Length: 348
Image (cartoon, rainbow, N blue to C red; front, top):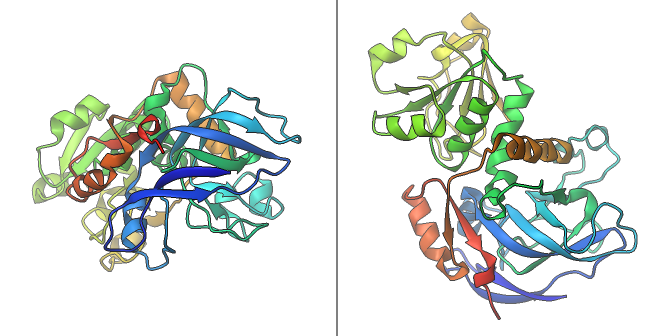
């Protein structure tokens, strides 16, 4: 089907209007009109080819809220008019051990990314949510719970599940002591979700400037990571630290903050970090771990949890033609805390 979007055609080119063909729907596909699309830091990395594997032209966008406008004859979960959501992946092998237990993000054959992947049947390059329409197999479309604000929900499909998944994996609940490094798109969701789970939440920041914001988001405290005395006093005081910083940085100041068997989970930076010392790891039986998004079942669980607890990201709505300015602002961390594109602004 013919559709329109915004694409980047080269590293040094701005995103611009782009007309293209979506693949023909298969029997188990839903066709959706995209209503809202969140702007993730990964979109910026992809457009800039920061990871070195972008294929141009590229249409970013993997935080998608839409309305079903067509269903294949084999679709049983959705009907025309349903509100659905799509996150970072649109397919997986469905038969490996990871897929069978609902961990499609860890598919042994590799999941198919919403953008930057290859369709498992046609081998077409996948193009993302900065567009008017999307075709996706029904197993990878999520149901938007009643009562969840459609205009604000899009970032839950990446920032939400990326932080929800490690909180669930490490069994965060009442009495858990959680630290959050970074208070951007991912960090503010980590604070909201951990707080909604009943944890005691501390934001780790280089200055005191974000204390008011941290408390407004649900944090119980802010720890200034550049204050040596405060950091020393806080040694051993966290069960879990969620590290959302999306660039190379030093983990060493944070490792002594973990209690015995505590874990620092990296969810932001994909690439190198400053070489960590093993001393606090070995002597305290501490861990450094990584975590991607969650599987489809867990993502649906997260959406239902957010609807039940009224947990939503703080967003700034933009038009599609404002995306390049939004990218510039994102590079300066000038957004609180996530841009969302109103796709009604995208016209032929």
